[in-house]
Length: 328
Image (cartoon, rainbow, N blue to C red; front, side):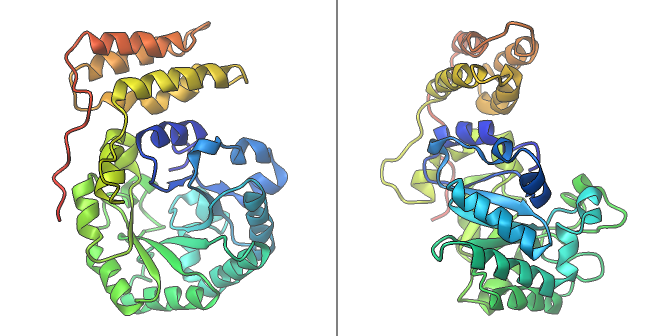
């Protein structure tokens, strides 16, 4: 989710769901230790609970970056061992590290040693890479990293081909194998195992939760964010919990945009994330079109969001998302 789940997107998603755990985009240790750390780490207090996702392989660098994440107040530090991009692999981090479980374990141990005891370190990874795709290798990887102290594994239920497939193809061509993630939970019952990959609605998430401890939703939540409107009730069991209606979210984002634009943030950096707010309901096209055509113009301000909302409200739009078909 690099370039997607930045602080503006996370603020937007938090308006829709109070309880879901949000993740930053992957940030490399080098970007934090040698770049503009505040640009990557600053976040709004309302984003909590929020996890910092790191990319790196040097234990000392990971420890230093994890300390920075703790100082900025993040609720979890996550090590990405799942990204298949060539750029990531060439830097010796991401999915290629599945071939080096001992190095990942060293990184986890270093991070845990640098953090307060109650701040969790988690690992996000694939079920395999290239020819290292057997279940035995996956178990060795998890066992090795768990022995270093990691208790939470977020498992993308696809292998990754690091040679021959693009990152996008790696999200689509290798088949989803949720049964592997479920088997992993059965074989490591003391660990928290989270399913990742292919989840497009809450009903699917609930079905996975019959077998594992958690579900990560990436592009599904970005492309159809209102799917999270019932998450607090359907997933977390908060009786009567519902999200505010779409219009109030839009108005809140206009207020947020005014504040951030006062700090020099371009309006379009914010509105690009809210384009799918009305996905699937009447008025969606008018909403997207107005934002797309006007947010980038010189002098554009938060009123663009309110103008887009006015165009939506000229079409009958339900205030609340219909309850998903949740499996119980």
